[in-house]
Image (cartoon, rainbow, N blue to C red; front, top):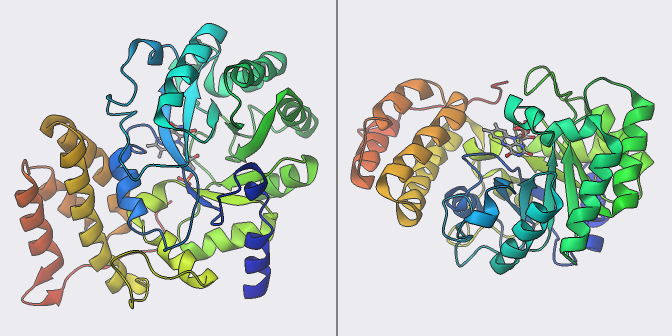
Length: 359
Ligand SMILES: Cc1cc2nc3c(=O)[nH]c(=O)nc-3n(C[C@H](O)[C@H](O)[C@H](O)COP(=O)(O)O)c2cc1C
């Protein structure tokens, strides 16, 4: 099993699109979460020598042309940020063109188009997953993005409104013909939102159908799931959302499995494994995240981002809701440190435990 997985990583076709990529595991775009502070915290767990591409949260192409790109909380980047593939939401050529022009100033490695967002607002404006109901228009949106950049254009999509295989296959083929260089599939229907299970057989199916690299996404909870997704579907990359917020060290665990050295600053250490070690690391990760939020955002925005982060990440920790309640009362980085210190360690004893399944 081990050799198969390593073989799959070595044969990932992502490097045909981005030659620098040698680590086919990616953070997912998540509104309110995949901002500079989360990327910084997850980057701290990237094994030395590993290179992947990085998302932004979904950026509305109607708003970007009026914003100072690089200065808003959603578009801020750090000195370490490279290989960014920002995600845009939209369906209008002039907005898409102007948005991509502005995003070029972030030294990006590509542009991702959102065809998976199922919220009512996206449906009303006919973008996000709504585009999956209008194939010709969806293909033209890819062509619009292609006209605006010479960089790779990627599409993140779902399995669509209903499970009509022929329709889905033609839809994806059309995206490729319109110029999409990579497809990323979150195999849930629009109606499922994030409920029920992601159907990984659809990732395997898409991989067989299209020539471009396929990134699989959905329901990775622990690092072994990411390896299993590679093996079961043959996909070229695995995108991880919620679990990577709670377990940013998944990148370290995967790197260790594949033979990469530990992350910078963790030389000679093994990646955390098991409920106790992972809980302890979660305490460290929260402090990192808090510091990165205060470094990058105004205090009120930092607090808001921390609150949302904890809401998404805490279910993996036993009594995480209690920790959340205490941390949500904090205002200064020092206060967060004190609460985390008291929660995780008392009289030298580790009090917390991490769990493997939340959804
Ligand atoms: C809080 C939150 C915000 C999200 N925002 C986006 C988004 O902006 N763009 C997008 O394509 N998907 C978005 N998603 C979906 C994720 O990218 C991913 O497809 C989904 O969470 C399944 O992956 P996971 O099981 O690894 O979390 C969001 C998910 C969450 C939990």
